[in-house]
Length: 256
Image (cartoon, rainbow, N blue to C red):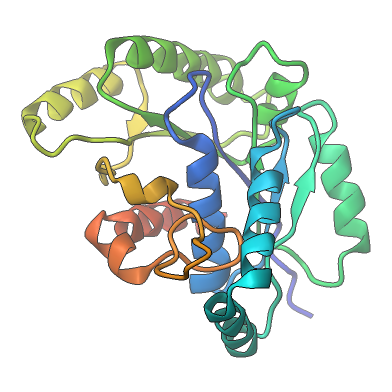
């Protein structure tokens, strides 16, 4: 019997709020689960906010009263032969224990688990949770305060957990989010040269500013953007480069 690949643990994390870690967790989970057909789970450790658990509840309430989404859900389930991905509530200190307890009772094996962590390393259990991950993706934007905070976070994780080999963490990758395409691309190239000098990797795809990233399901129907129940709109993900971004991430996860 062929040995099943191990479940890969991933997180979009940073210690600076407002750069899209939870939104990217939802988009990535939905893309991997509904578009790529992988078995995905999300562990929402961002206690006490639990924004992804709240997102799923909102999504389900909208679907209950919106026929177009009801039909889409039936069509998607029939085509994929799978349910919506689970979202498990936890805390950073208990996230791995809670995941293992869920996994023991699950009727399918999971390919990828995404952990949504609090936006500060000072929260109890965050360092231990990061240490148990396989890959960490860190959003950044061209703002001095965000850059300083994010680089401090990334270099600390890289130097203390990855280079020393004291954790399970295999890689850390920065990526540009909220990029204003009117800005000079040379500015980002200079930043990335600085990242290289610090020994930090940065993904090639740069995600632009788009208001649709934070649009939830509407009671009047319409395209799907941020949702735990459906794949994000294909035209939107292509236009903003999210599909290319996810291809980069998948190529990293396939090294498992």
